Each structure stands twice: as structure tokens, then as C-alpha cells.
Amino acid sequence: MKIEFAKPENSKCISEMVKSAAEELRGVDFNEEGWNLFVESNTAEKFEGIISNPEFLVFCCFENEKVIGLISLQNLSKVVQLFVHPMARKRGIATKLWNFAKEYSLKNGSSGQYWLRSSSIALPVYKKFGFVPEGERRVFNGISFQVMWFKNK
Image (cartoon, rainbow, N blue to C red; front, side, top):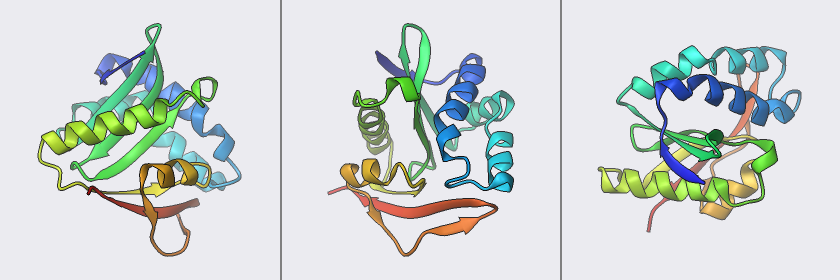
């Protein structure tokens, strides 16, 4: 297992992995409008643009040359996405991705404050990392989420 920067040629695999990892949220955190928006914003073409955008850090976890996990940060402060393929869960991959991204961003100018919009199933994972919920769950464009904050000590 290795973690490294995503490359444009990984975009198709990333897109497929993210959709597979999020499928269980359909009908839970996504209504049909939200799911369609999510799928539309996670195409291989969208990932190519994100990977080449200097505002974003995108790291993939690879195993046997396959993408099994992904974390992306925007402006060294917003965790945009953290997904692990369903068949690779319960192995500490999300923790490894978070620690890798956090360490990299801190070395490159992050203030140590991060925020995100968590799905319902990811809440315990983010709480384990030290994120704290802010306010009530929200719904925007058919997507339900919980805003959470992390302050590095």
C-alpha cells in the first residue's frame, strides 16, 4: 500500500472508486437531485481538472496498482473528499490518508485548522481524527451533511 499524489491518468479509476464508495449514501445523505449532482461532479474529467488545479492537494492510496482510497484538500484547509473503497475499509486507510494529507499540508503552510462537510457514515471517523461538529446537519442541493472543524494542537 502506498500513498502518493494523484495524476491525471488516475482520474477514471478515482471516479469509479468514489462513486462505488458513495453508493451506500444514496437515499441516506443524497436525495435523487443530490445524487445526480454528486455523480456529475465526480466524473473522470472533473477529477482531471481538480488534480491539475494548484488550489487542491489530491492524494491516492494504491494497492496492487489500484486506487483504493482518496483524500483531497482545498487551500490547505478544507477536506473536500475522503473516500475508501468498500472492500478496503476497516484497515486504517482513511487514517493513513488523513495523517499523510495533514502532515503534508502543515509542512506547506497550513494553519492547522481544517473543516469539512461530513456524510452521516463518516461522522465517527472524523470524530476519531479530532474533528468537532458545528451546528446542526444541513441540506444543500439535495445533499445532507454535517460541518465539522479540526484545530491542530
